[in-house]
Image 1 (cartoon, rainbow, N blue to C red):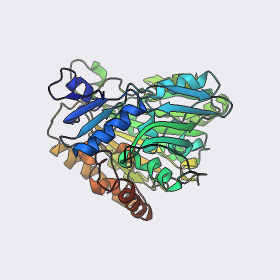
Image 2: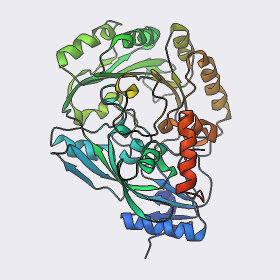
Image 3: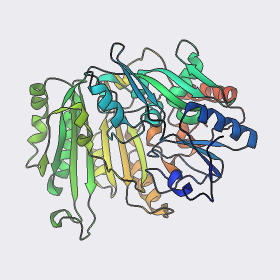
Image 4: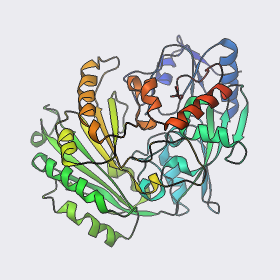
Length: 436
């Protein structure tokens, strides 16, 4: 019998909530899937009952939600199998990156995981995945070797670039728009250790930190992947007195090369001035979550972003004037290079990601004022923007059809629309950021 929870079930609220608390799913029915067959039967039931299908593993990148439908939760599908000879991992739908990192490390290997080891590996990868080794090895999506997916006809299929290049291409970059992925086979890379960590600078050095970092990124080897965050601290009693109402610059370093070379590369950043904290040094990849040190618990947050082709002083001034958390990631390198198996991940021409995030929001919070503030910053960045978006950073109400379209190159949008009509003609998978 198919396990289901309706709105009257005592576990309904706990099961539907993920990491993003601002606008959680409100389905008519939840299927807590433990196997691929649970997923297959859930899709069949939804199709028969005329219910739309949504999927949630950890709920970090929660898309725009509408009440109703059937929600498949995959957190119980947490199997990881490493093939050290082939340097691959088979990862089930609910697996978090920390599980893959630990399992791969036993064989001297690493996945192309992101800043937080707590994020779901499958949805992250299918949305692109700009991780800690991105400039050296590219998108996590570029390492997908095979996909197990339940399509709208409730069939479980094993898809590879050779067996069905069209469906493979659409799934890898189209995320949840073409079916429910129950497992991925992904390539691993020979990385055991990093020269990595973080440099923290106090408020008076924030402008210098941002400008120095931006100049520094102009001539870096692909082995260096870095980012900077400017974090405003609220004027609240629980915040340490020296930080209340002030900003901190947080430069994050992940160098996949010789530690001595890494130290030489980081020297101009250390020369910015005294650090509140300096954790940059040699570390095992299993400790890489400490580089960004992302929040661990569920939260409500509002986020937007732009992709930039350059980062001149005028753009830096715009970012310094923002009231939200600002994060700028250095792209390029392998992210912009051709891949052996084409996929639909777009906007590979951008050199910087500039994100805005406002955390600490309660469920159902009115975000109109935040939208105005964020849109003002994005508008001011227009002269240097590509106009593109990153699918994994489209959250909640900002995952509009227009924003989703911007995540793809124009020709790819047309191809995705054609494939969507072929594989999901009834638009069963309408919650998972399908191409619009």
